[in-house]
Amino acid sequence: MPLRRALSLIVACLVAVACSAGDTSTRPASTASATTTATSSTTAATPPTSVSPTTTAASTATLASTTTATTSRPAATTLRPVCDLSGFSTGEKRNDVVPPAIAGLVSVRAGLQDCYERVVFDFNSESLPNYQIAAASPPFSGPSDQPIAVSGTRFLRVRLGTTYARYPDVANYDGPDVIQPAGFIAIKEIHLIEDFEAVVVWVIGLDGDRSFRVGTLTNPTRIYVDVAR
Image (cartoon, rainbow, N blue to C red):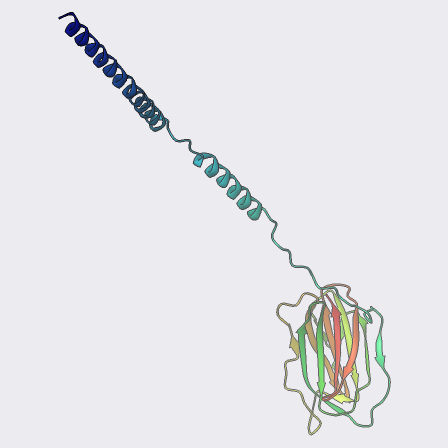
């Protein structure tokens, strides 16, 4: 009997030790699982960090700055052309060479350029009429000595020799005696004053003192007067 009890006690102790060993091996697993779960829960509970507002604000500020810089640029200005007024003066211009034949006046035209306003006298012959073009003062009159009013405050007298404006079989000018070109600044009026005995006189009315130049062209024969703007 004492031996049986001793064996029973030994067996009970072994079983107890075995159970203790089993409990110890399972506890770390439970602890690790709890730690993992807690860590996962903490991570899930932490709100994500957002940088969108900063990025959006920076982008908006950059866009606003760019837009402001673009819209604040001054508008491009149109520069006036650089005018070469060589040959322009207020003195008389003339050609005293008498041509071999009379030239008939065909037309009188006026045109605008960037730096000057031009009057052109067209002829129907290769002969170039002699001319005297200079500043003049009113009153102006033709062969009848009747005064002729011309618009303007300063005037250029254009005398064309050895030519006619209206003469049978020689000249057939059919334009107006008074030309008031629209949109001009310097030239106010171009007025036929005289057409008599191969002398034609026009007066150009101006808005004030202006320098001018005179030139000739061929094919057809032309005399032009440029008045500086």
